[in-house]
Length: 40
View 1: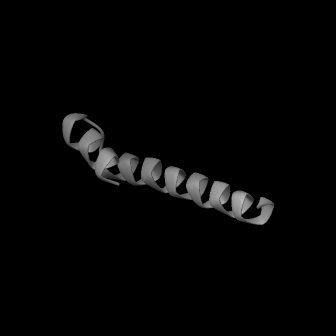
View 2 (view 1 turned 45 degrees about the vertical axis):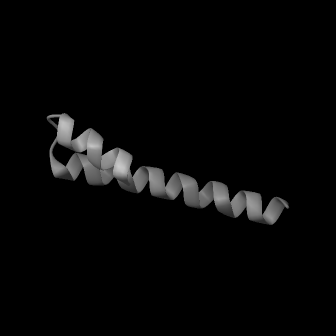
């Protein structure tokens, strides 16, 4: 989250675009965590 917030501060994107990017990363990491937890 802090890395994405820094990207928002220094870019000219709107907050809605930032939220979409942040949710994409959250879903990605959650899916990878679920796959790895089932695998191991």
